[in-house]
Image (cartoon, rainbow, N blue to C red; front, side, top):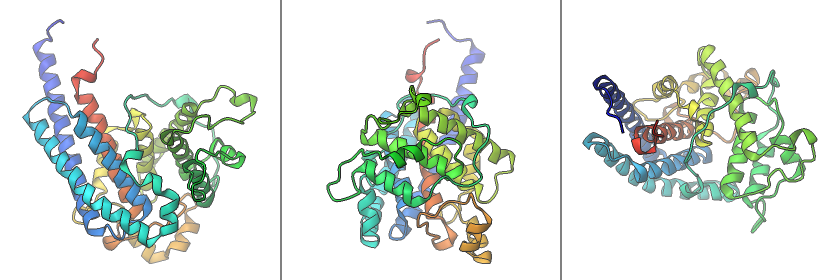
Length: 350
């Protein structure tokens, strides 16, 4: 193998050093998030707990595959191991509290309430801007109740000992509808991700549309994430304000977890880190003031693309349970991706 010129070696070392600083920033942010979970485990809703469980899956995989590069990297791995142990304890308590506080909701989504359910990407791809819709609907395509019903049919929790991987015509039509905006779009992606992780094959069986004959589950994921990329680009262009922050981070979490590495942009990471409440360790505290001034119901009407409520909780310090879970799992995705990039053994030799 040819030796690299000295300048190239120095450039690689500089990239590695800056990458290690960024990994430090992520680990520091996640440590604050873990402290918030420890304090608020009894109050965090299902969305928030699932976000922390996805983070746990990402951290466990990161620790397992951490590149053996140098002492600093190994010290960071040690910090990640400590974080995993803290989360193990807090998540056991948080899941138990969910079961007690909302037993019906717990039962319907119990399969998601284990870090083992969530698969971390082993290979990466990119979105395709040519797949972006020329126009999108002004309002969401469906409501949370239909989304929940379709998810429970996949999970087999629609009744006691229910058969999993059921795809009804209404679920398939809704989850494959093109032109949906915002949370409908991210839930369409999540539907296919959950089906894949549950091991459901032939989710598209029964779709007789000739125009969709060659479509696979992965085809839909790529279309949805290409549109979520377009949405995020527009949010950044429009100054990344208020209610768009939550969907922006949710898009990074889901498409990153689906293996689309172009969501892990360095400047997007800085946007997420800046949103954290440095004292409380949570995310979403900016929404509290707006909600208190004009009220949640009016806020729903004024902002039609605002998140369809999934029993989100505004916790102490005005923290959003949903946004905190989404943000920490998005950060865990960044960590996984950066470690893959840093591990020279995983790079193609050119």
